[in-house]
Length: 374
Image (cartoon, rainbow, N blue to C red; front, side, top):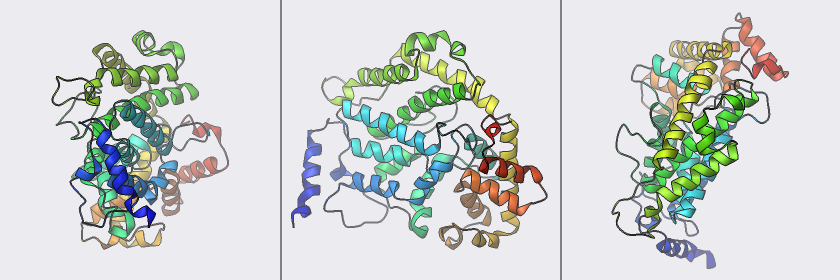
């Protein structure tokens, strides 16, 4: 059969990549051994498994910054993920690195994000004593929660890239621990920042939280005056500054994916500006407090009535079959919810809270005030 040797040919093509590229045939393997696909490399399989999983589909109804926005052009977790994948692949292609693992990491990096964006993440982190962050939850999704508790059984390289894609608030290239073990994973980490600092600005302009004149001069002067200019500046600077990773020049035994000092300074200024003028402000809006109330309500309710989880489909059997503390199962359940599903459950649990019912009704019937959190 012709298709039987296609994977071998694809793996042979990878030998033409940079010597620093991650090769699928040299993968450290999966958590559980399995027969390789005859037509796809291991990283291509990972990409496909992520795209077809339920957690990926739910990203379309999860908040990026603006909670449950009505406008068709506001960014969601899904559109953010696709932008990250596009940016990351462009960089990987230019540096002659492996596009397949780059795409897989990018598509899987936010699978564990809870409803209501960072407001939801911060609230769960305060409720669950061991703490919560979406990077660890994304790995938990692909390892345990998908496929009725079987997980996606991804390669170790893709899992590592997903786990290390994010960090606390600090400079874009600062690390609290060692960087991702693959250059492709490092690309995804930078592509994530390139995507969100630009599309979050566009959303803030659309929501009238900012004007173009508000942007710091160093941002417009160094990165550009439009979103497309800024994205182009950042991508081309990453490629130029990381050119040793392409294997086209000698002298650097272990290259890193980086930005040049002036562009890095401008990007960090841009990020700090967004934290002060957009993220902090959006987290103080009435809709953000209502989101916190919903998360707290759901967490307390399902701790008290964990058997009720069964009564609220869609729900993976993984949430109830694993022999884990009830707090962990409740956390998994809430983290997997979309914004509107969480609002709907909260309204059903506490019908006396009219404002939750009103919020849900306003959104379903097209109240434009929802967008600005009023």
